[in-house]
Amino acid sequence: MHDSSATATAPYISIKEASIRYQKAEITIRRFVRSVLEQEKCAERTMIHPLPSEAVKLKKQKKPFAYTISEDLLKKQYGEGSASSASHGSGHGSYMHLLERTNRNLEDQMKVKDEQIRVLAQAIDGLSERQRETNVLMKGLQERFFLSAPKEEIVEGVAEISRRKANLSNIKQKKKQKSGIIGWLFS
Figure 1 (cartoon, rainbow, N blue to C red):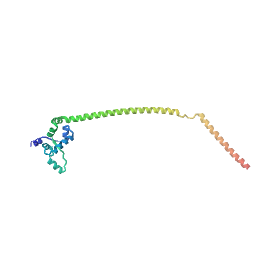
Figure 2 (cartoon, helix red, strand yellow; figure 1 turned 45 degrees about the horizontal axis):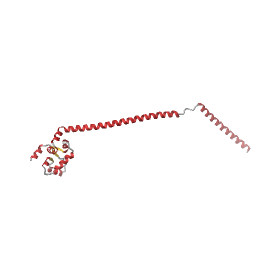
Figure 3 (tube, helix red, strand yellow; figure 1 turned 180 degrees about the vertical axis):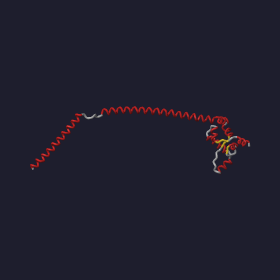
């Protein structure tokens, strides 16, 4: 009976809360609860709720339930020092530790990203310089191979050649016509 009066005064907490307060993994707390549950006649069994009779009823009704554990049992198993320090500021301290670790990770990632951006900016600068050099070379090639407008003398020479060809073709045509008439007369 002494244990039941002690359990009535001690608060019950969930497995998740116990893992936070006592800084143990949830699976460790679950294993401990399972080991106590397997010992049906153990006095510690009354320090875990639901009690065996209640658990059977809940299972028959197919209602979900979660085990809660007496803090006295947890103190007995894991020591009071960790529980008292956990309840007085470890929660705040663990969150601060988590935030500090997250900040360090984010700062490290930012440093890596900054370095990547710097390298990419250098690559872009190099490519821009190569493009400028290519443009200068292309301009030089265009100026070297650019054809100027034809000179007047050449244009006049081409026109003269065209006139002479036209005259020759006219003369040939007239000869054909004459030879055609002469041939007709003698035939």
